[in-house]
Image (tube, rainbow, N blue to C red; front, top):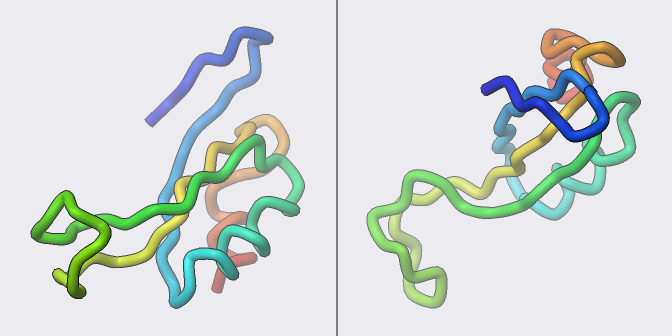
Length: 79
């Protein structure tokens, strides 16, 4: 998903899931080229986050500047 930012940054986004979302977010938000992160849940059967486990995956949305870091580089950091 390409995003055009106000100050002409070439932004894109990707979602990472891997264990505790807080740990993933803390690691990724410090990588070069990462503009923002948002932790959340994906693919559950309910919109309610206060109930029992419903199949969701904890994930982090990462918005990054494609002029500073390539998606393949972010993936290699993650794995």
